[in-house]
Length: 465
Ligand SMILES: [Zn+2]
Image 1 (tube, protein in one colour):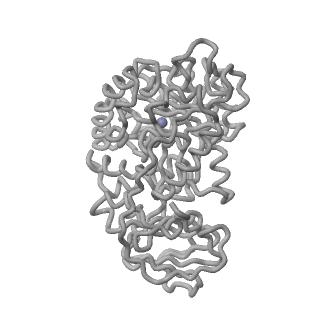
Image 2 (image 1 turned 30 degrees about the vertical axis):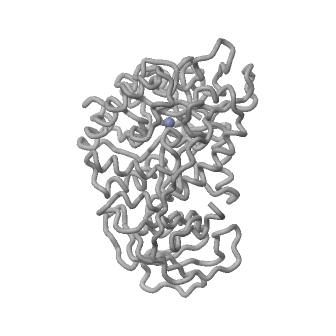
Image 3 (image 1 turned 135 degrees about the vertical axis):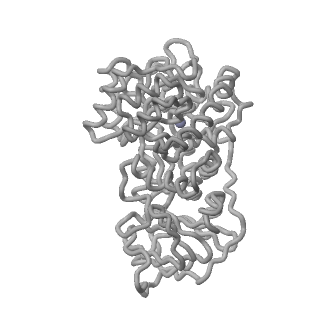
C-alpha cells in the first residue's frame, strides 16, 4: 500500500524481487478507540427474523428517526422515515410507511448518508516498524490488518472508501461485495504508480532489494507509465493512484519535489481515461501539483503547498483537493526516523494553511484522511478540521457524501434518496450545530444490512467487539 503523506506499498506475491512478496505495512499498533459513548434512546424493539448474513433482513425495512439531513439542500427533516428493500432506498418520507416486519425506530438521532473517505490505506497502521515492514512482513499480515481496520472503519460510519493498497484491498473490496466481510465498499487503486526511487517506490535498502517494475507500479517514461496503468487495471484497480511529488513517509526527498514529469502524468491520465478511470495524485510541492492538475488528474492528495495559480486552475478544471488534514493532529512523530520526522514537521503546517486558503477560495474539496497515518476509525476527526479552517458544517458533510461520490464517480451513493444504495448512518444531535457528533456514529446500514446499532450504549451487532 502506498500512502500519501507517506508511502506504504504492496508488492504482488509473484514479484521476482529477491525479497519475496512483502507488502507493506505496519503492524497494528494502535487498536482504536472507537469512542462509542453509552447513551442512546432507541425506541421500539426490532423484530428480527431469519438473517443471512447477520444484520440483513428479508423483505423491506423501515427506518425511523427524529431527524434526517438532506445533504444536497441542507434541509433537516423531522420525524423521518426511510424504506429499504433489496439493498436500496425505495422511499424517503413517504406519505405513509408500509407495514413491514422490520420497522426500526432509531429515536433521537439524525440520519445521514454513509460517509465516504477518499483516501485510506486499510492494510496497515503507522508504527515504529513501518519503515522495515516492506521487507519483513508478508501480504498475509496485511490482509488480516485490512479485515480488522475495515471493520473498524465501517463501524465508524464510513461505508465506502477509496483505498490505496495492493492486491489485499482489491480482494477485500470483492469480499465486501459478496457479503463475506464487514468493511467499507472499496474503490481500490492496487499498486500506486511512481518513479524509480521516488515516494511510491521502496527506498532505503541495498540494490536488489525490493526493486519494482510496472507491475509493482514503478514506471519511468510515458510508455512504462502506460504499461503500469494497464497492469493495475488488469488486476482490479478502479482508480489510478500516483506519486507526483516526493512525500513524507519515505526515505527520499526533498519532500515537495516534483517526481513525475507533465509528459508522464499526461500519459497516465489519458491511459486511465481510456479505461473510464481517474487518477489521484499524491502531491505536496507546487511544481508537481501544478503538473498533475494540468495533466488532468481528478484529485490532488494532500496539496500541501497551493498557490493562487494552482487553486484557480483546480477550480477551473474541477480538480478536487483531498486534504488529509486531521493526521497532522494525530501522527506519532516520535515513532518516525529523524529524516522523515523533519519532513513532516516542515510540510504539515504549510498544508494546514493551504487548506484554509483553498476553502476560502472555493476549491472543490473531497473528504480524505490518509487513515493508516491517522488511526483507523478516527476518520471523522477530519470534519472538525475543515470546520475550524472555515468550512460550514453542511459543506464538511457534503465533502464526505455528495462531493466524495462525485470524485469517485459513484452516483449510487452519497445521498438519501429513492434508488440510492441503502448506505445509511445515524448520529446523535444535529451535525449542523455540532460537527463533533460525527465521531459518535450510533447506527450503520450498508446495502440494507445493519452493521452497527448502538442500543443503551451497546452495539447490538458488534459480535463481541
Ligand atoms: Zn496516503
